[in-house]
Length: 160
Image 1 (tube, rainbow, N blue to C red):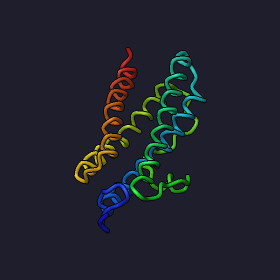
Image 2: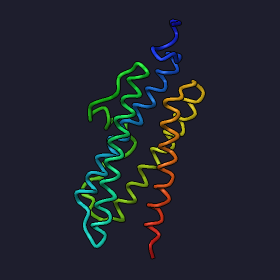
Image 3: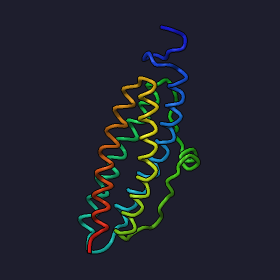
Image 4: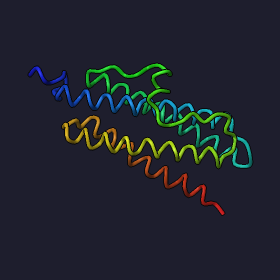
């Protein structure tokens, strides 16, 4: 195998750039996950049962994505971030503390997607340019799922 290629046959420099961007996505997902978990625990009001379940789905899905992202970084030959100090420094998603209002929680979720989707689109472009089909397929799946969720959560807020 050529010196400039990693263990899966991708350019090492390209893989390093992708891994750095994936670590940024990982950090944001960790905060997004913790926020979703808090919304699940603390939700109150007449939409409790409905939102309690939705937030559980959201944090369970986020946990799967966190693992996939970290494992992709490892597959590319690099180390995923794994401390909350690093996550807090890198994340553009802010912690949402003591949110019990469904409307406020959903607005926070949508703000999270305003960070996640552009990062995933950037990774989609970078991975396409690097012939990294593994990262590209992950990002394509995430984007498709999250665009639909943005539509659904936004529709929930439009309730009259």
